Image 1 (cartoon, rainbow, N blue to C red):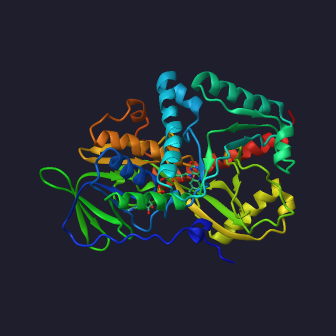
Image 2: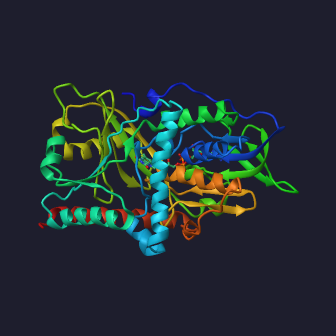
Image 3: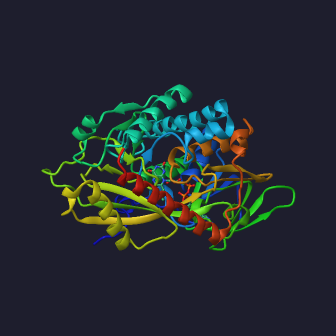
Length: 431
Ligand SMILES: Cc1cc2nc3c(=O)[nH]c(=O)nc-3n(C[C@H](O)[C@H](O)[C@H](O)COP(=O)(O)OP(=O)(O)OC[C@H]3O[C@@H](n4cnc5c(N)ncnc54)[C@H](O)[C@@H]3O)c2cc1C
């Protein structure tokens, strides 16, 4: 059974040479070839700052960016209503709008550069898992009204009957539809963006893990990689996500690497058609299922949040059981791919985007809702580095709060288990 990532198995074989030698100089070097690093590099190029280098320890999209569910939608891991409580309405609106603009920017980049990444403009459906619960249905409607009134965002209310026409499942009640959302093959997008950066004169180096960063007298950084090569850069952006280790304790000590899992079934036979919508689908539990149909009729299914990185065989078992709770008719399907990935979470669940020292920037902690926010980070950092505008003060409020290492991880797992238990109780209670 080929238990690897479906994305890795179907991506084009685009490779980028490792950094060699020690004479190279760039204006901006970026650690990490995930969406945050790539969006920053591309954002700089689009502002005329073409001298960029992306240094990736493994291969482009090796981290969360090349493994995720492929949902591209507005918002952040932190709830929109919490943003308003934290910041007040106007700054919260601005931050939320940045994430929606980022959805548009990703779409424009795909279209204007012909990036082949299987984009499906199907929107996203947020499904009520607690069918029959009047409270849950009311909350869904209130959420739609709140988003409309506070943020001017219009999510369609989808009645349970319509949901049943699209999905052959007894599981759900009503749903909300975010029309402007889409889904795509994230690894193909990451590779396409990296190629675009390289074609536009940027450097992209795989197998070039950054092992040491030294400040250079008079400004700038000397960046050494695992293979003994080095690079000098005026500006350095750290975008290592949940995969950054050791290098900068001030960044690794303020976010937790948290796992989530994905699998892909074999292609569904033509007489089995339980999902008749092009939308990306997820539900309203804390640890929700997220899934979508792929072009070759496979079902891509993700879920679970855990501090444990698990083996693919175990991931397949867990997710298959989750899938059968919703679609028992898929019991005979083979699971052909299963994989996990690490998200990085701050305690406040907002991205950490900022500056550690002159010329030393960071973008991390995008959580499980990171495709659009990493693009927000790329735009903000490109503006800041090119001197166009400072980073927004509202984002700086979500700072580098310590997460307390292993104790923090255990506390996170305890809170996830508690939230899952709450959802299970809610499911079993009437009304
Ligand atoms: C399974 C899964 C499903 C998800 N589903 C969705 C979804 O559907 N929609 C959504 O919006 N979000 C989703 N997310 C979240 C989203 O994928 C992430 O928030 C986002 O991709 C983070 O991007 P990043 O660039 O910060 O980190 P990453 O993509 O993890 O990239 C960091 C990169 O840095 C590299 N690196 C680390 N250390 C070094 C070093 N020392 N030197 C050089 N390189 C280094 C790593 O190898 C890695 O490639 C999901 C995440 C996971 C794991």
